[in-house]
Figure 1 (cartoon, rainbow, N blue to C red):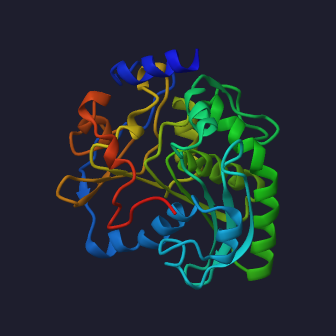
Figure 2 (figure 1 turned 120 degrees about the horizontal axis):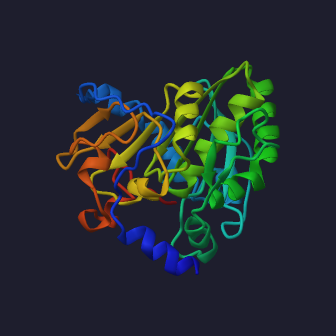
Figure 3 (figure 1 turned 60 degrees about the vertical axis):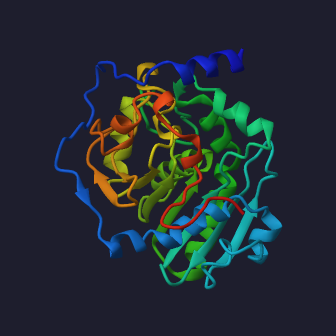
Length: 299
């Protein structure tokens, strides 16, 4: 059943439907990022890639060039098995003066993460993990279940890191499925730790929730970024016709490798993912892993 429904999800066009809750569909000017602005993403790109590393290698920070690219990183905790629970890690970067949280992305060699990707029914966000949030705020069921498995362990590790390093900043990051989980983590941590500044920088982010979710994310995490590479198909899934909507903050890497900022939610300009890749047939799955300013995702 999952396979049949996921196939329909892929082949149907990603057209938009009217929503009773108006979204932030700003059509301001699309602007190019400077070289310095692009370069500022690089440490987080490496952390998103490092999410693919197993806990033992992540803690030892010795699984390859991408994991070693931020040598000052101080690991605090990690977990997951890369199968039923995605790998994750928490630590502190003194250069960025921020606690870092990252999750493993979708690994095609692991069937359970792929099944989780196919559980795309929208359901009300957990009232236990997200107290006080309206039941009208809905998220992808598989992503919500996955994030719930590690939420409290990550919160404990983040609190430990905040205390040990006297910082008030957290950045969650990840690629693909890892980006979806890290977006939910960012929202969760912003509610659990209201006196701390939480930010999110994701790569190849699929749509995570409905219009009410996107609006709430825009209000709670106004400086978030999700970076999409060229004709990657993942950012247009699940389709808007199923009620899924991206929050604002897209940075789109063009075919000429220039980066542009796309204002609003699911900007339909042909310079942004939703407009550039209107259906999966016009996308290229090989763009999903990058490169993101020269960095390919994976350990």
